[in-house]
Image 1 (cartoon, one colour):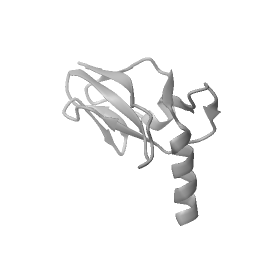
Image 2: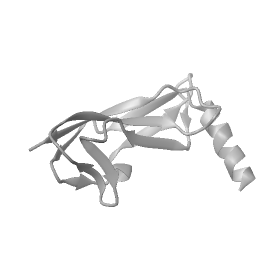
Image 3: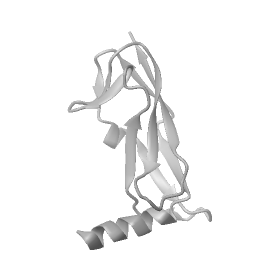
Length: 106
């Protein structure tokens, strides 16, 4: 397990930018759920633009009163706007977060 953690930390340290390939935004109805892990496609890239094959990423909803990650997926709770925050999950990571807007409609 320690070797696995070191490998992911070393890959995370290579990531300078998280690029969101798709979608540009997520629109949900109140009560609707979508699987965010398969919906949001990202790439970790080095400063040179080279793609890092894999990196330990983390997704979190910024305002959890509007939408939340649940067993069913990303679920719209009430009308409003928030963002999915995408970060590199590592102590040595230096990549800034990327965002995917989330809009919840009636």
